[in-house]
Image 1 (tube, one colour):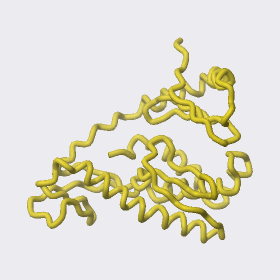
Image 2 (cartoon, rainbow, N blue to C red; image 1 turned 90 degrees about the vertical axis):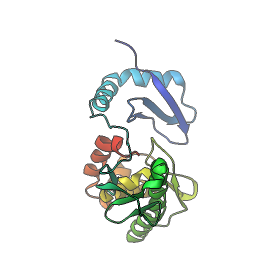
Image 3 (cartoon, rainbow, N blue to C red; image 1 turned 60 degrees about the vertical axis):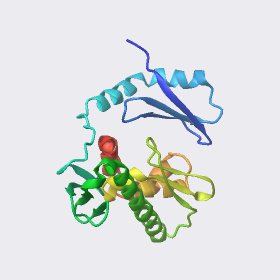
Length: 223
C-alpha cells in the first residue's frame, strides 16, 4: 500500500499538531513552528488508518458539478438554495430577492458577479455575528477580517483579531455561528484543549452537529 503524501505543512505558533484532510482529499499538517519533519512523518504513519478513512470519506462524497450559471440553477445562501433567474430587462447586473436575478447581457460575468455578492454579504453578515456573540458573552475582540481562505474557515490572530472565510456565508446560520464561537473561544484558549471545548460547548451547546455538518458538506461551499 502506497504511503500517504503530505501535501502541505503549515507551521505557526500553535502548540499542537493537527492533521487535516481537505475537501480535495489532500493531507495538510498544521504544526508548531519548530516541529521536526521526521516527527511529523512519524505521526502521519501512526495515524495512517485514520487518515485513509478520512480520505475515503471525502472521495465517497457525490461529485459537485461545476456551476454553469443557467436558468434554474441553485446557489446556497445561509444554507438554503436559491434559484438563478436570467432576465433580459434587469435594472442591475445581479440582484437578490428570494432568488438571484441576473441580467442576460451579463451572463458571461455571472460567476464574478456572484462572487462579489457573496463577499459583500460576508463582510456585512459575519462581523455582525461576531459582535453579537461577543457582546452576548461579554468578550472584547480585535479586528474582524473576511478572507479568501479555502482550507480554513476561521482563525484567531494577534490582538484577538479574527479571520473568516467568505465561503461561510453559504453555510447555515448555526454553522456560521459555530465557527464564530470557535474562534471567539480561541481568544481565551489558544489550542484545542479540554478547557477550549468546554468553553465552546457553553457558548454553543449544539456545536457538535454544526461541526459535523461542516465536515460533511464543506465541498458544497463553492461557486
